[in-house]
Amino acid sequence: MNGSTRLPSKIVSRGFNDDVFVDFSCTYTRTYTVMALVTSAIVCVTTLFGNTLIIVSIVRFRRYFKASLYVMIANLAASDLVLGLAMILMFVELIVTEIQGNLKFCMAASTMKLVSYSTSILSLLLITADRFMAVVFPLKHMLKTNQKKFFCGLMAATWIIPGTAIIAIAVRTTSGITHEFVVCRIGAIMPFAADVASILFMITVIVICTVLYCIILWTVKERPMRALTERLYKKSVKKTSLMLVVSALFLLCWVPFIISSIIVFVSRSLLQSASCAREYVVFLGFLNSSVNWIVYGASNRKFRTAFKQIIMCAFGRIGRRNNTLQLQSSSENADQAVKGSTSRRQQIIMQPVTLN
Image (cartoon, rainbow, N blue to C red; front, side, top):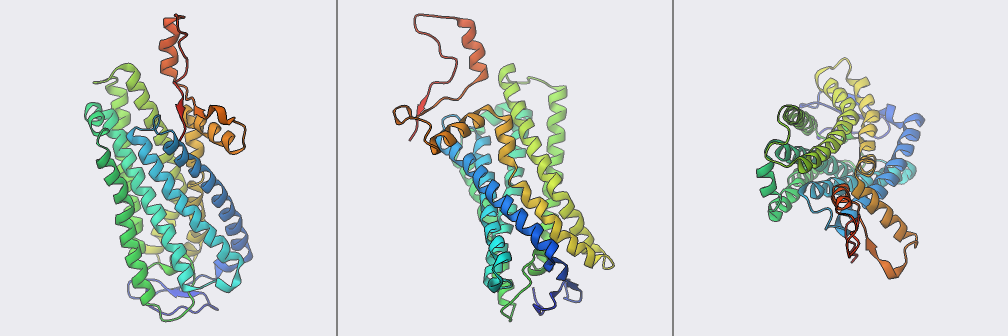
């Protein structure tokens, strides 16, 4: 972003021709600082703890989390972890006055935030597409899930594409600033054109996901059990319902930010108040990264059991002699209960797998 920024006045230019100026002094008040400190602390702790549990569970017990959906969930958790690390930088910036407004520090934190939420949005889009294929075209989905290289390539693309674009913008923005200090706020540091493009990108993804989920719901209602057994179909629908909740939470947390951004872009009369409001409501979007793992744990028995095993191991409550994981499977429980007792007692849980 071209144009000068003076730290004492907190005024920066906003617009394609840098002919509009916004005073960000409203974000240097005690109210904003307290709110930002509390929110940053919550996001840091819950995001780093919860999403680490998600990734460790999927990697350590990959035998039970080998479906394509879990690969995408791990990718989403990794993007949320990056945001947790970025919030640590923001927390430090709020309490250490010596680095407030430092250009390099600000660009590093802002870049991490932008890469995080861009990757999260792309991950949600891929998850929605995966659920769409699983319900609407189940046979094709079953064939696709065996292509590990394909899914690895998709996950890499969710990082490489937005990462490359955002880093390029950050480098160009930094080279265009001739002074040492900046107003370290998303609405101030981000070029106006890139700001508009990012919001349009979010809206586009939200619209696509909404359309796909509408088709999924219609398919579930009108064409149940098509090309699948009833048991597999119910499992697929249950996973889809879980991801629908995750997507709905994302929408709920980010819609205020999107609305305030649109007002910033189209209304000069409300530009000042909308810009300040946007800097507040963006923290609601950050909080979204700290709740996804709770949704997984509350809705998925595999995750709940894996979380319990990992936490118990961390606190030394599991003996070294039996370093195994046992994940319950409700479908297997029902099948094995019918068989009854035999010469070798049937297990009602999955066979344990030795941890690495």
